[in-house]
Amino acid sequence: MRAALLHGPEDLRVEQVAEPVGEVLVRVEAATTCGTDVKMWRRGHPILPPYPAAFGHETAGVREDTGERVLVGDSVPCGTCRPCEAGRPQICREPHWVLGGFAERIAAPQAALHAVPGGLEPAAAAMAEPLAAAVHAVARAPGWPIAPDAGVLGGGPMGQMLAALLVAGGRTVTLTDPHAERRAQAEAAGAMTAARLADHDVVFEAVGRPGAWRAAVEACAPGGCVVLVGGCRAGTDAALPTRQLHYDELDVRGAFHHSREEVDEALALLAAGAVDWRALAAGPIGLEDLPAALAAGNDGPARKWIVVP
Ligand SMILES: [Zn+2]
Ligand SMILES: [Zn+2]
Image (cartoon, rainbow, N blue to C red; front, side, top):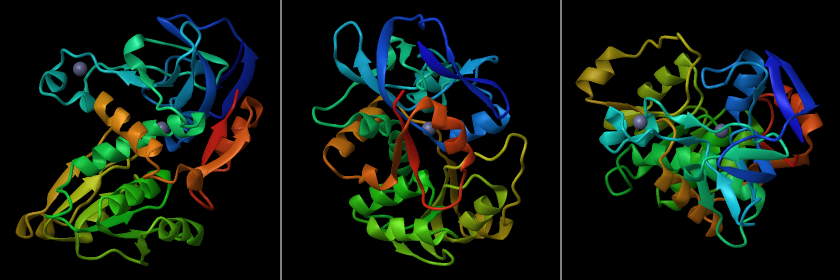
């Protein structure tokens, strides 16, 4: 079968490879690209296996054995580590990662598979993976009656998904991003936009740079909550304003990944039309187009490329 393999930083090759081996073989209908793929392609990533590495972690397809349509979840928590025992599988210490969506077929453990609601398109099902991370991030902060006013820092795909979820949840949402196209996308989803965020009950940071972490804290109202969704480059430190953290009693929380239930919730939200996934979709493209799509990087509108292998 054909698969896109990473051989090193910015060295992606589409090759003929052996069939993947695992519990369930899934024929890939659509795999979507994400910021993590760009990081993996550009500089490698801690969860990548050794080179040459299969990647792609937002994957929907059809089970070769039963013909059932499935979303291939990108991880299975161990179930026995301390966070897993405490009901927090998102931060499992030893998850089994399931990568390899940029290929004609992917092998996955049964436990990673989710049934796709009837009628949901493959690309939409694939996007349930990142949307589940947004569902989790929203759940990390106080909800609507306590925190009606939300700020979102960053208008990439994650910021757009957060804004859409928060709007659907009845909040007043303000998103900030230097790109006019991204501000327009957020406005189309029902959010307001501003050059700067200020005084929000809850602030979601979806950029992944130390300066943005600081800006998120500075934009939080006294007694509010900051949720850090964007992962910064490994080894980076962020300088945060101590006066506000202490005297304003801010809650600063990380948000990472998702649980199995959050993935199912994301699938249900997409099936119900609560999030306009088409507004983020670009393509479809083939495996050969992946390097150019990943290199296109972060300018212009927020978009996720739909790869049809
Ligand atoms: Zn992703
Ligand atoms: Zn675990």
